[in-house]
Amino acid sequence: MPSVSSIRMRYRLLSIPVTFLAVALAHFLKTPNPMMILIIPVVFFCYSDGYIGGALSGAVAILYSLYFFSNPGQLFTYNELNVQKVMTIVAAVAAIVILVGRLKQRDAAAIEAREAHVREMTRVNMELDKAVNEARNASKAKSMFLSSVSHDIRTPMNVILGMTTLAQDEVGNPEAVADYLAKINSSANFLLGLINDVLDMSKIESGKLEFRLESYAFRTFLNDIEVMCKPLCEQKHINLIIESHPDMNDVVMMVDKVRFKQVFLNLLSNAVKFTPEYGEIYFLTVTDKGKCGEDLLPCSFTVRDTGVGMSPAFQEKMFETFTQESSRYARKVQGTGLGLPIVKNIIDSMGGNISVQSAEGEGTTFTIELNLLMTQILPEDEGEATVSDLDFEEILGGKNVLVAEDNPLNMKVTSTFLKKKGVVVSCAENGLEAVKEFEDSPEGFFSAILMDVQMPDMDGLEAARRIRALTRGDARSVPIVAMTANAFGEDVERSIQSGMNKHLTKPTTPAALYSTLAHLIT
Image 1: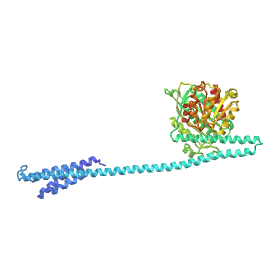
Image 2: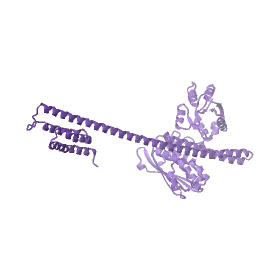
Image 3: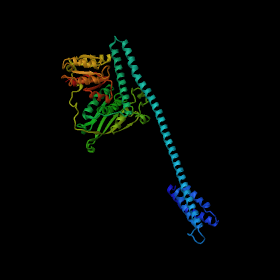
Image 4: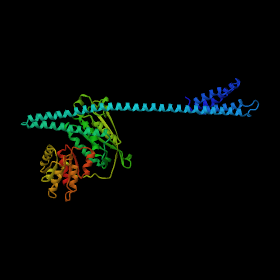
């Protein structure tokens, strides 16, 4: 297809012979006024090509007019009357050329403006259609999300309420009560996991998932994984095999500990859920230091099980939220359908890749490729005593701890946990009371303060700042621990910035509470 410029050039070249043809026609017909015919090519080429074509035609018309109105035999000798005619023709031709050219430019501008308006309206309509579709999809996703969350919340809540009622009816039967309480505890932990997963997906979808990098020894990571996964495997008589490349023994990583462990705990807990009794689960780490960059260590992590496997249909959508396998075995397993989407988003955010190989009845293998950032900085908690190494009753017994909590039931739970280890508990119902209680106490009386964040009269953050600002020897040194349902990373930062030493998220396990206090007090 010829370009616009080539078409215009054709018209410009064509304007010359066409104009001469018109001149010849006027001469042949002895037309008294050649403008009667010359106006034809002028107007035609002005509309066809604009100013240039019309100007060429007009120039030929002027030359012919000079010839037509000159005295016979004297081509360029003319009297006053002929000069007036010539000037009239020149002015007429120039006016026509300019007028028609301007009209064409105006029409072209109007056409361009109309086409631009059409393009803009098309773009706006497409964006509106896209926005409408996104709104519809968001509304549909929200409905599905609420439906799934409602179902998954009501299921463990039904167990908790039902088992609580049954336990109340069996007060005189300790074995039955213990069994009911174990089921209540299991359902409560599942409910807590669901809430955490929903919060994680909310942060991921809103783009607020943040990574708090800190040094983490790889051998400590493997120990943490084994401590948390081995009891789950033992309950089903599953053989857990953890192996790592020898080059990883002395590696210290810079990662977000919580997110890094979350990835592998999700995969390993899924492997436990979907592996029948007496199966096997492998957790393998491979690396090649020969391909190591200055600070980056390429690693491959493999989680392989001998479980029930996944269908091809599920593998296509396994990273979508609230998507679960529909096999008969999978329907018996309690899950949220959020674990794999969270793993995928975390790995993507870390610049890694996750792949899967699975077949029904043949098990599943997840492979994660990551470039780990290495550091020479040892973790701050390296060498600290583990929970099992501490005798909490010996460390905490007789210590005075101030608990600031506005909810009476939460106060009862926390106080009871502490008193079991011999802690002397003082209570405050809000931040204002906590500040006054500490201010009125003898210096060094309180060994620690447990501070809720959201409280009436004065919140825990302000209370911590007020205590740190007091002019007494222990105001800066007394450990203050946030115990709050505020679970986001920014909540932790606010707690630390207010002067607190640690941030515990509710619900807090007794082990976490005892361990935190023991490390801060000793």
